[in-house]
Image (cartoon, rainbow, N blue to C red; front, side, top):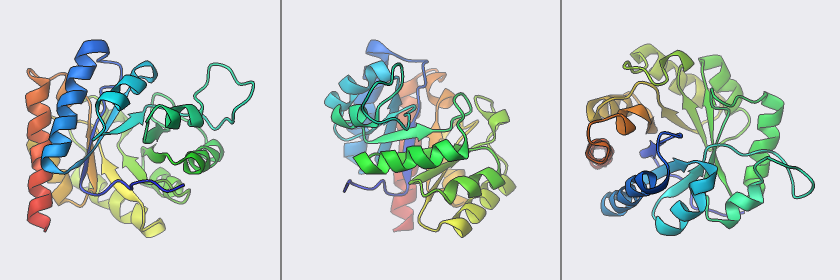
Length: 231
C-alpha cells in the first residue's frame, strides 16, 4: 500500500503518557504548525485514546501510535488492530520500546502487518546487535537508544551513535536511523544529526522543560537548520 515516506532529517515528539487532553493537543497543534512552516517531517506520538483527535486536527504531522499488535480483524480483545489505526488517520507506529518489548518473531510479523495496511514502523533497539537484527526485518526506522539512558540527562556517546548508524545501515541501507535518549537541548539535536542520525526523538527534554513549546521549537529549528546546511 503506497504512503508518503518519512524523509530525513526528521524529528519525533514522544510525549508518552506525560501529556493528555488539552495539554497534549496544545503541543500537537504547535508541532503541526512548525511542520508546515519549516517543511520538516515531524512524527508525533500519542496515547491510543488521543490518536483520532490528534490525526484529525493535525494533518501535517505523522501521527504515530505508541504500539500496535500483529493481529487481524477477528475475536482479539484488548489489543491494537492495524486497520483501526489506519482508519483514524495514524501514519506510523512505534514497536519494541523498552516499556513494551516484543520478540523478533513477533516483530517480523507486526512489521509486515503494518506494511499491509500502509503504516510506517519505528522499531526500538538497545544495542548495536539488536539494531542490526531489527534492521534485517525491514522497518522504516530503527530507533537506537540505550535503555539505561532513557529519561536521563545524558545523550548517547559518540561511539554508540556512529557505530549504531554504521552497523545498522550495513545490514539495511534503506532504513533510517533515529537516535534518542537523554536529549535536553537544541545543541544535542544538532550534534546527533551531524554525527549521521537521520532523525532525533525527544520526550523528557520537551515535556519536562520550563516551556515545552519553546523547547520543541528550538529543537525543530535545529533540524531545519541542519536540513538547510546539508542542501
